[in-house]
Image (tube, rainbow, N blue to C red; front, side, top):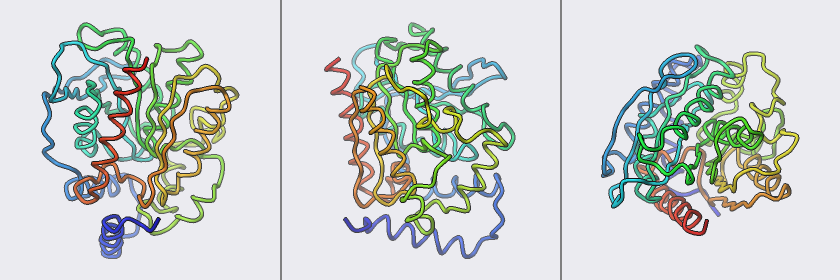
Length: 313
């Protein structure tokens, strides 16, 4: 399928903006860029039932979270999605993913808890993983306080947040964490140790550039072994016994192939997998519903699939 025309137009605007900006990559410049993009392209002001910002004690200090209650919540206790935003482990935040979390809460009927985990270079690997495992365990241990059903606990994330979600499931399956009912991974990064065909084909001009990925990888990993399954969950020795997975990739995404490879590996290990590659779309499309209308429909289907999975359990 050709590149979605709205995505194509957005990529042209991003490319024009990059030509007018300094070429030096820094964490601060990338964070500012993603904030500007969110302001321009995110689906802002999506109605939501209720939002609450809190801070939870973590092993290295307070971890901010944002709790989204869907508009149609008609019972006090809801299933829960613990959501980890993407951004290579270096940029993005609860704010850049606010529209996504609102739409996901409404479409799934779940209470969504977005996590503001620590970022590199200030806090390189494994800080983000440590925060992710810590907050997921805390959430599972406080169901009454959060009005959630601990038997319907889902972890989800996009891009590098998908890495965190996948790793949490692997650790939990080995006994280091709570029982997870479902994992939902959007364009996940699953293998930093390999060069896939999609990483080569879409290295330039498809939202996230190879130079940015390589710089962020060095900053985030800070010397860590790229084959460590906490960095590259596809490299885990065993995937047997992991929670059911819904994995979504985008056709014109450098990370497409590793997301598909992870889906195949889970399936081979006997895990129930639902895999979808969204034709014509690009990395990060799910956070650009204000500029790419199909993103709204995709997030609606992601949420509907979660509802169906919970109802079938």
